[in-house]
Amino acid sequence: MKVLFLGDSITESNRDTADPLSLGDGYVFILHEKLRNLYEDVKFEFANRGIRHSRAEDLAARAGSELKAERPDVAVVLIGVNDVWSREELEAHLDTEKFAVSYESLLKQIKDSGAKLIVVEPFLFGVPDKKRFRRDFDRMLKIIRAEAAKYADAFVPLDEMFAGVSQSVGISAYSADGIHPTHRAARLIADNVIKKIKQFL
Image 1 (tube, helix red, strand yellow):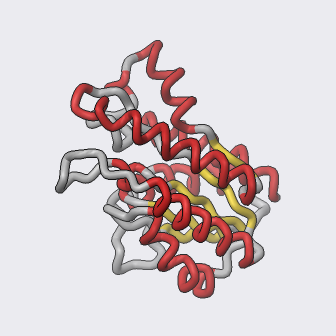
Image 2: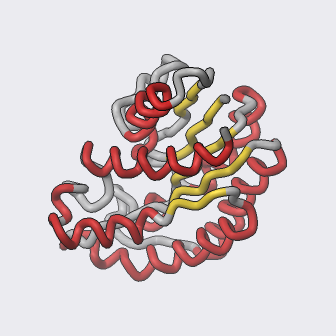
């Protein structure tokens, strides 16, 4: 089974972009280690194609070439936070119509390729300097959930999950900046994506 991961810096997570076999040190690497140990009799291949700063339109633009090159059995998509938040602009900038078109194009390309599609919901923690992005972020989540309902074979409601678990132990256990996951958060992402991949074994 070949699993392709598409996303932004959360997926990329320090992978060596010059090495196609590099998985980085984030949730993709953790998932790879756990899944291979759980199913020693299954031959897995993993391709991390996350690229930092990516938005939905970027993934939609390169999905065709990635799918053709990798021919995955399963594709995992985690994208969206950069469509709401920009490190350069430091302001909300979501164009809902543009995002909806790009996101649907991305999911449709994956489904048309024959791969099983796992949509992972992006997340945003309520740290002080990110709270102002929440309104646009929630607007984006509505689009993601609607498109996932049409195209996805499995869906991981990550923003909802993190909102729940962070209430008991605090946001800092899961993210220092409200956007990028800690190792603990990466393990949670990996565990929940594994649950979905299991359905296709």
